[in-house]
Length: 433
Picture (tube, one colour):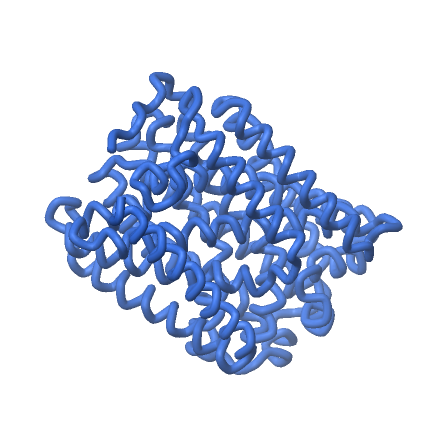
């Protein structure tokens, strides 16, 4: 099968690529991981989140090396397929897992957007209105992505860099209005535990998911050899800085009991109590910008990976079609599937599926890079350390789910089972042609 040639124009430079990565990374994650982090490690939450950034950096090492070697916008799926050409079914499984992981994050981000958008209205508790708003925001950014790569890139630039300023403003206001001292917070926290830090670093890894989306823009970027590592490593560093500063501001300004009580909306509720309605409005604005750019960036990158998988025959062939270099049918398919998930509700467990998925897949990318280390010019110690860390993180989050929410673990494993059956069925269909 011959893939369509990439478009001749290269509309995405380093600012746009950074925006795509940060758009996918700084989404709803920071608004949900805070409560989990504080419940496990208390005042040490910023440290644990920083450790999560180290895990993300280790994962990104293999992605960068494989991307510069293969130069393939199919990213995760294509890297594994080309490293292990004798195992196409394994590549198909990874493709299905990753695509569904991206779809679930789009659904979660849109639902989070809707929750914040109506939080101060008379419809705040109306689930039908919330879902209608979520579907509307998916529809809006579907149109943006269908319209123009360049247009999407400029809008993503504006949203991402504006939301970072908002989030830093939030953290600065929280730090300036801190109510307690560090010794007091240490007394209120569980004893410092390496195991607790590792649990938080693993569970919150999903907040750093998204840097891979840069690679999906391979055919539309300028100077990949320079811009891919700069965009990926730079985005992780920026996201880590934003997360750590916000976490520090929150633990100093918001009482632990409030963070644990509100969890998903701890920042909004805590900021309202600390800074009044203006502070709450700033948090809501930051949440809306964060989730919007995450929806747009994820829809952009993941749709291109879906088109590559379809081109190879492991998804319906009509999803491979491109018009003007844009995989419009894949974009529509992702948007429609994410909308169906929104209507189905109960998205928190799907987010847990995403966290496990991206840790596991990152481990498999480290394995592939280790095999190709001579050609990708990777250091053997880095590949081995990455494999051990990422596999360990996968095991930790599964263990954590097993002891805290076994029903969620069963649901996660069930999703894996259904996706595996789908990938197997489609692979056999391709073989029988």
